[in-house]
Image 1 (cartoon, one colour):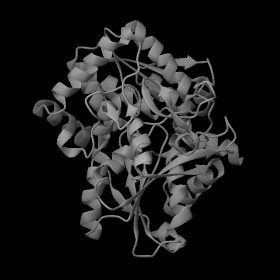
Image 2 (cartoon, one colour):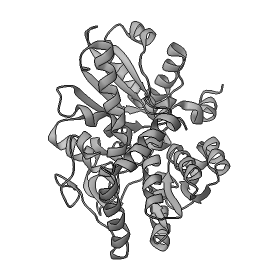
Image 3 (cartoon, helix red, strand yellow):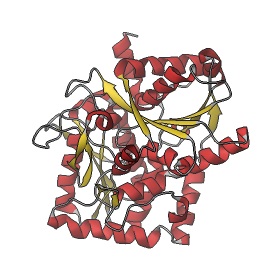
Length: 398
């Protein structure tokens, strides 16, 4: 897989000053084991053949690149293409790396997959992969997210996973990660920690990016087939940042403008947003050096987003590097803008997006009309909104 990626961290897992491996000594052997296994198998023909076969025949790849004609016409500017990750099995991009992590765990002789989840899409995808591979599965999820994403909780349980409700701290994604790390420290001999984004200690940011980079490779091939040229702009939502890196990676060496959209939440007051790259500063969280929303003592601040999957005070270290390098522009969309975009895409194109993806759609809606009609935008529609319909219906009194 290294041949198809555009940027790799150094041997210690750093993208510039970001990344690394800030972990307790008792976890070092477990993380080194993951790194050694991934380095062994990532270019192994048998491993890659099995992985690619599952992407095609189980996940349903390649996902379509769809020209949103009605939305484009309504906005009166640039063409908007949607990379339809919402059409993957389980309804989001998460299955791309969960299949890879489960295959790796199986080859390592592990018996159980362990992970955190926010919106539940990573949890559902990992529970799906565990069922497929005959592995146990344990998912840690904040109490607030369990209440918001009840349908995904049921899906995980139906797939055979144990769902651990996290009631500590803010009861959202950051706290679920804390809880899952704690469980991993006690059970790492037979357990594979399948981190759900391009975050955590090395090798996870690079490994998850490698599995997700299929999104950008497909999108580049598809847009060249449909338009005979590269897009002018890419847009994706950013929480931890796996869907965004998955799309961006293939285009980093091109002239395409790249935009990541963070959640501005209710306001820019502390605790009311999760705009890490916009308002954070470098710090250490969950085994990595990265941009972090933090207090004066370096402790993570509470965060909020209408989208549970973006509710995280950190971000993948490669995103921090790309921000500082000026290669990617990071902007924000607030809760109301995301909700408006959710409704707009649903009613204009008949596609109900995840609230996470709605942040990217919101920015496309904001700027498409200001651009020439010959311009091309690709928006990563990272997930579908089935999981959000009850929550949105309650918000809108439908």
